[in-house]
Length: 336
Ligand code: SF4
Image (cartoon, rainbow, N blue to C red; front, side, top):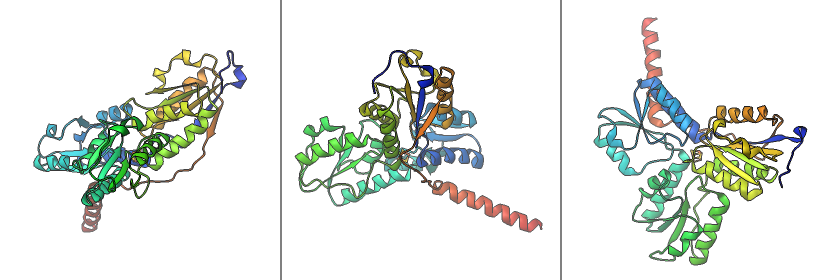
């Protein structure tokens, strides 16, 4: 849709994508930190940002969470929580060596990819992991089978890939990639390795896919698309790319309303809005308020897919919560 120079006030509108924001894995990871703080008291250490969102990290810090880069930074005997992006087995070993009680908040859909990597490595496949170099999830997954995994960072990387046996190659992927770009990479890999095996099920998770489907529809009808999310959030960045690919004239990633530039609205009739999987809704509300103050108060929800997935809390927390509940019950009965 092309932009108009002076949109009439009554024509201005917002298309709000749904689903957007928190996915089940992020929700679980954030609740895990909050529950751990309640259960064991502050401080609770968290290795890396629990999810890639500045606001979430700051809010948890205020409640007593301490974020560290390396497991070694956690003083002996403390609790450490591993982030939703997953960790390599070596990190679990570090926690054991440091006599730390670990709570693993890795998203179950990332764990699924780890398990696939372990299985294919056991069968001695060369594993081509499609993902972004340096991303925490890719580091964690690669750590499951470093001798078998080669990272493929997009279609342009395919020409550099070599394998031991062209008949024993499988591809896996990071969970938060662009669906379309990943398929381009897979096509290029298949041209090079015609017997390339595909993963048993989608590695790009339901939340990443659904948010892309929704923003594709919104982007096709918007002049400007604002994606709420942090710069280090892979799935949020992909939403900007998908919106542009769908036809939006411009799209920007912002942490919140304070990062929006008034000049972006020039000549804009329709503003699309969405948020990445690690973004709390309060930040989207801030953006909608900011837009409403500038005449974009008419909000239409565009929801091509429904979502209802939830995950239970990490097992270490469930075990301790159960034990606490049992203690309360037995304590109660002895008083009776
Ligand atoms: S984006 Fe997907 S893989 Fe990542 S935490 Fe959310 S549900 Fe899990």
